[in-house]
Length: 100
Image 1 (cartoon, rainbow, N blue to C red):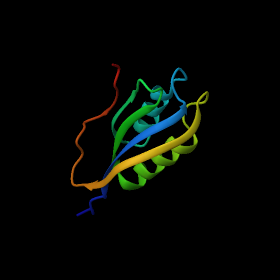
Image 2 (cartoon, rainbow, N blue to C red):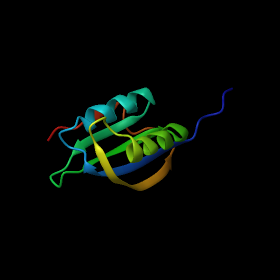
Image 3 (cartoon, helix red, strand yellow):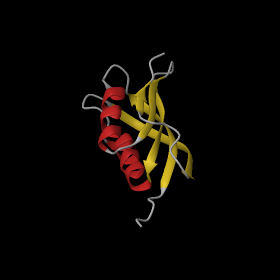
Image 4 (spheres, rainbow, N blue to C red):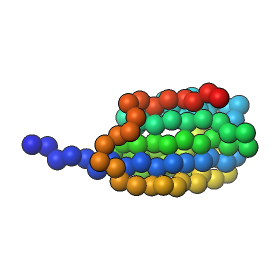
């Protein structure tokens, strides 16, 4: 019987030049690559917010990507993480770009 991997969830908000530079698209692609679920969207205050869930090691890799890499044309000033918790099961089936 295989041991279950630890799952976690974290909310994030990315500040800087993150709108109009395909940030959401690249976030979606990175989430798929890391087998994460959740969502990402633009805000009216020119930030990007979202939530990621998945295996703890992959969420940590995504946090690093959100803080240091982003899309090729983005310029990340900072990324703020909140509500970081261990979870028993995933709350989403996929990773979505929210357009509102």
